[in-house]
Image (tube, rainbow, N blue to C red; front, top):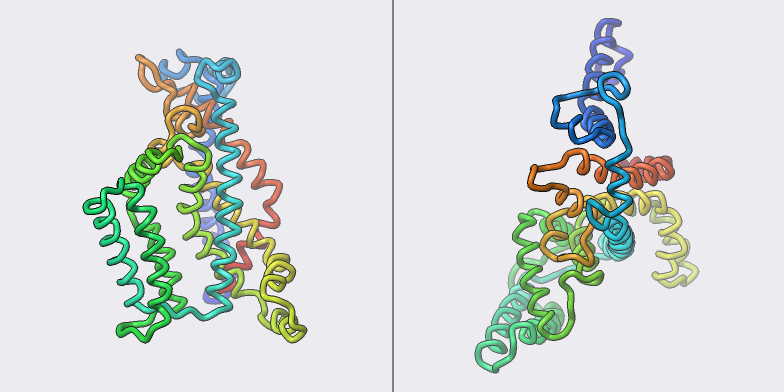
Length: 345
């Protein structure tokens, strides 16, 4: 079997593999099928016991979708528009910024001194405590003053021959990816406190487009940098070197050569990021109240004194799934080629 795949198997072995694949497809597809059939059931049809086949053991109805359209189950169209605006904005910004960061990590060598990072931490924490406890600034004002000062001091200190280890590109990449290791509830709670403090200065970020979009951009950047790094490493560097011979600026090489050559990878990364943002629940729960609530919040809120109303939940979930399925279907060829490009590594 080594090196031959399924061609080296006997007929019965191939049939066994095919049966296993078919069984796995049934297992993965059944939850989606159950959402679809439940979305067309009446409340008695849901609570009266399991039924599986439309027009055979239950009569389908469009009433759950009519309730969504009429706003009986909440402001569905507004939350759908919120998810669309925030999702597209956050995915586009994260893909653009993350692609530039990933390209820099591939083509340029960075040397970050550990001592400079330690200076940043000490000055940021010490400055915050000094400004808030000793100088009478509010916590939000102390944050806005301490962190820029600490960042500027760390950048200057990084130019000095400080003792300690020097971190390279691989270490920076690990730092990016490690941001996803934190429990999301910790990050969401910290962001809520930060947004609350900034709101006291007059910049409303809770339940706002800017606040939710910035949160999702920060949430998505690690995965974008990680994915796009492999895409850019798969691009031959000789093309860029030929442009450098002609004294083409680096930004023109990136926009005019690298971006068109990695368009499939960018599209695949954009779709993956959009899927994460579209389905995200926890940050939207913490950082929105009513105006900028997204679809996952609406779907989770389909209940009453009778408990969870699964017909309404299924109808809302089905409508939320369809746009992503359509977009993935239309762009599937470019997505597949982009994912395969990133898998060359």
